[in-house]
Image (cartoon, rainbow, N blue to C red; front, top):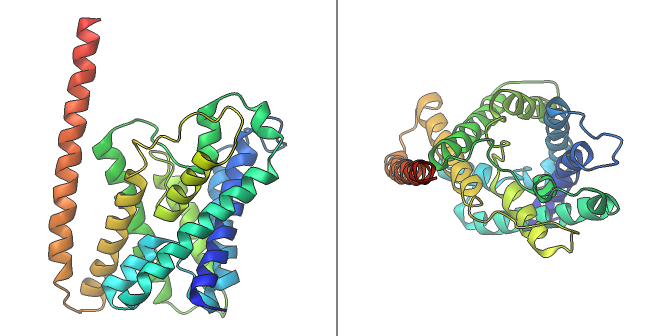
Amino acid sequence: MSGFLGELIGTALLIVLGGGVCAGVSLKKSFAKDSGWIVITLGWGLAVAISVYAVGSISGAHLNPAVTLALAFKGSFPWSQVPEYIAAQMIGAMIGATIVYLHYLPHWKETEDPGTKLGVFATGPAIPNTFANLLSELIGTFILVFGILAIGSNKFADGLNPFIVGFLIVSIGLSLGGTTGYAINPARDLGPRIAHFLLPITGKGGSNWKYAWIPVVGPALGGSLAGLFYQIIFEGKHNSAIIYLGIVTVGILIVSYLTSKKSQSHTNNRKVVA
């Protein structure tokens, strides 16, 4: 099996199990309805672990463009394979989201709230704030990639690494996930969001494209910075790419901060007028 197919199948499995737990907890007349955040974080952690077990020996189980970019910046993965891996991850995520839709087919009609339906497929902010939301995704993905690289540097019993990575996902969800739903994976968010847009979901509403760039750009930056940081600090290898990527990151954060301030100012002005 090729690396492309491995990433496609692995990411599809990730979304079936991860998106599936979101659907089970959120959609009406599901036996798992209102099980809560701990169930969601545990479900996502197990989803990652099982998916890594499934295709780790085939593709390395990146399952996440942020991980692929991080390894490429770090020099552990060839840049020539980055496009095909990201394409496979995106396609796999869309397939996985479609399977979740089919599995819960009768429940979409029973669930009235469009936002709840979108939440099965894609993330969204608890408090909309462009700067804070972007920073949350950046930090969460930095911790994800740093944690994966740290876990990889330790010796465990054969086959235990994916299980430990699953616990890392649970930890990030419990500690950092409450702000934006911790996408920490551009394919995990964008692929299912596209599926949500395309699928004939009863009463689905919009796909919130205004927010969609944040769980793509934030994880891409956070993961890439983590890969470079680990290489420089823990492996003692110089990589000037961190300077350029750092400048780009700071620039994007400044623009997002100014955008947030402008948006808040407009909101306050409308309140005064009202």
